[in-house]
Every structure is written in structure tokens, then in C-alpha cells.
Image (cartoon, rainbow, N blue to C red; front, side, top):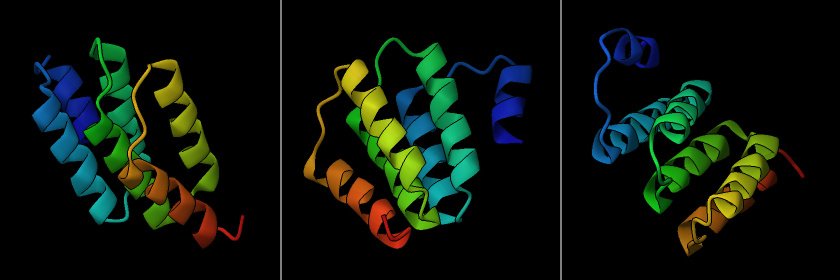
Length: 100
């Protein structure tokens, strides 16, 4: 609802707002919604940030979605977002929880 609501009112997104939304979704075990918010950010922002990528990867880890985590790492690489210890640990955690 958050993503569609933001689009409906044409709310200007800031990285702080988007990062908070992704983190909140991830903590609530709503990894699909976290990825939707991340995708919205990727389409509307010129630059992806390490914080948003890390939050989305953490959401994938919570849900054990290793394939989505690896996809996010590739998006980071394409967008020239530098991986951090936090983002890499979240990707490893997603793979571990899924047994991959």
C-alpha cells in the first residue's frame, strides 16, 4: 500500500524516506514490499545508495530469499554501488537461511 500510495499522490521520494520504508518492511518480514520500495527507488532516483541496498538485502535475509539477494548484488554492481561488509553479510545470511 505504501508504494502505490506514494505513486498515487506523486510524493517526492527522498533517500531517507525510502531507506526507512525498506528497513521497516524488512523488519516486519515483508520482504516483497521491501523489494517493491527498492524497485521504485531504482526507477525514480538517479543513484542507488548503499544504505537502501543493505536494507533490501537484510529484508531478503529475513525471508531467506537468496535469489533476490543475489539479484540485488548484481543491481548494486550495475549501478556501481560499492558493497559493504553489511551488504555482503546480509547476502550471505539470505543464502545461509535458504540452505544455498
